[in-house]
Length: 635
Image 1 (tube, rainbow, N blue to C red):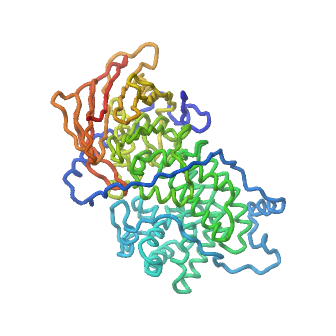
Image 2: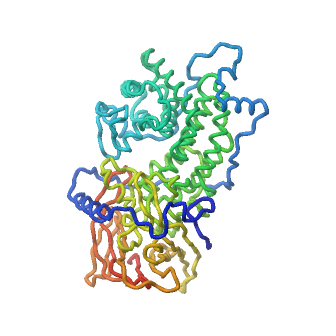
Image 3: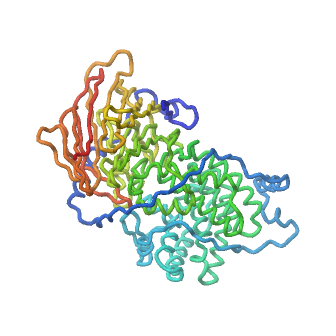
């Protein structure tokens, strides 16, 4: 396979990054090299982190289905329904379209939704004890500013204003034991947000994404919030109705494609579960299918390239499907096909224990959580094999798994936590991580300090090569990505070795350093099919016909998994590594001295753990250079 991956699902050139050649890198080097290292060093002495649970085997999903591209067109309807959809889009109320001469129906829910999505019992238990528990950090329920003027950390904002905590509360105890807690938080939230604002952006509570998720969670967990006193129930039902009308008007102002899908999903759910909702449902279904077409690429990966966003999109559609089933309807075929498309790319980023690789702001989400979400979809399939826009190459070699980022970072319009991770890789063996990325920028605000978010998105926080401690793509504030890598060339093939075994060879190169340093970075990875040996070579090639004069500093980083024991060799050219399964591995370099530095890794709950990294660094000529290294299982 030989292909070139551009920085867009459509044909786009480098100008979309808003940078001219030579655009300065906007990562703060002191955050990347000082703050993270210092924080990681402190973590070595910290004892506040609970012990990490032993990884559990996750059942392999058997079988497969032939997946074709979903037809992103509205469900087929007759002329009358098309007219109703058009009229509703123009602003004619659903009550007028449903019963022109009849009495307006009172607001109520037409069905009870069965929740099939997993929640976190520990977070639910913390709620019952009076705290939000998010990525290891506790915040008292009474201390949260539900109105939003006093900004809290982004993870807490999302949980509070999306009401995703309802799923956790339902997971920890019988429903009747959670009603009091749910009503307490709901009452405080309604007092702080009595009416929807005139337009989105008036605080995090009224972002389209949070509003859509909140309405979906209210409808899906209605027994938790509508089983108390009549006054609160009527007030909540009125707010549900007002929120649905607000989304009807403002869903087009969503902050990104995933937020748009959340908004449209909520509109459809309200059309299913509220009286006189047929016009709203028809309107919402058309908008949802269009939004899904803009969210995902042709191989089923979301265009933000984030496994967290992939999981969120799956959860939204599964919850919407549950709303259809509650009203004894089948979801549109296009929605079912999109769910089928979304699962294989997510599975492609799982390691042997079922947990996720740390990519594009995500952390090593536990295998139990991934498996429970996939089970809720009902999809039985295999990890994605034919990679196009998703951009992550996966190699399964006996007990070893290699994940390799061979695409540009997401465009600013798609990114929430875009990372400069091009040509980084992760490697695991028997479910234990050997080489990792730091990950976790999206968890900043829990136990991971918010000030480290920029650094965790940097190239240096990933297992790849950096030049002059600069990012291969500029990392901007608010999750955006600037100028840098705009194209990646890939070649993947199978090699037949002399000893009779095979190996997978992947060669990829990016242009992220060409404008500043006149060098193209090429990385070659060769993994034997028995998983016992990974050979790598990082090559710097002059971008023009004639290399520039002078030298530039380089560093090749290999962040180690949290359970790896490491010891440098006496000759300074390598290291020995031991995994919990008793396997011993050797790292060797022909590129210079190997040093050991502190690092950190964000675990399956979004909490930081102290780790270490192997680093090869020095100076390289602007005329280019090559650096070989080897990771080999001993015995």
